[in-house]
Image 1: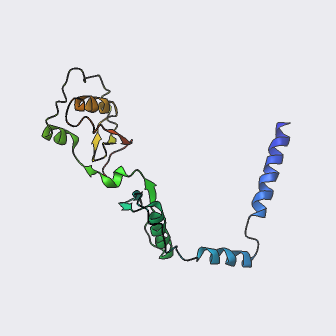
Image 2: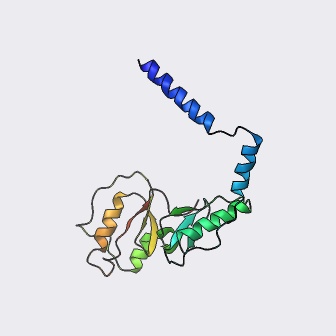
Image 3: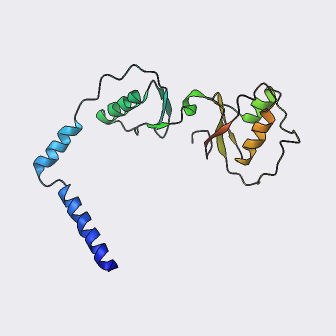
Length: 171
């Protein structure tokens, strides 16, 4: 019984794939002509900041349409750079800082007894952001300690959140 179901699924997939493949040279030419369509020249005039990452650099765009336009232009010019993928705006809109130096300049006491808790000593860097700054911390467990230390200070409205589960620095 199981063999029959697998056979039927295989035949259905084979038929589908065969029906949607390029069968003649004219089909191939039509597909190539479709890919030569010009990039759109007009994007809506709305401000919706969008951050894009191409594997090497971050770039901020006015809106998602502008990001798509940049990708289209890269494809048309056959650029060696990868297309941009939309990512969290904090990657483009925040400043990378050393968190310990930044907190010491802000006179934040990290050794508040109510904030201390045991954290694993395994280095698993995490990138955090508060909307203005981003920084790498050794482990996600320390995020609670940093946010606890910020409570009751002038920075209590700027609590940090996890931006990514790896370092902030581009490698």
